Image (cartoon, rainbow, N blue to C red):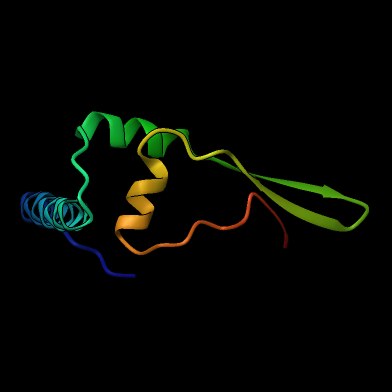
Length: 88
């Protein structure tokens, strides 16, 4: 385990990393021809959920429907969504 005691540096680093990731997401969306509001992206991604159901030793993962911008964001960054229902 790494203990880091320079909290201000860590906060600056995490903020910088967030900005880099956001810029990269914007670049992918622009290249795919999409222009979404950040609030809509966050709301739609937050609504995406997965539930695990276990019955008689069988486990299923159930994914919620992709609403709004969600599916297009995943598509723009090249990430495939898992099936709606899958056995795990």
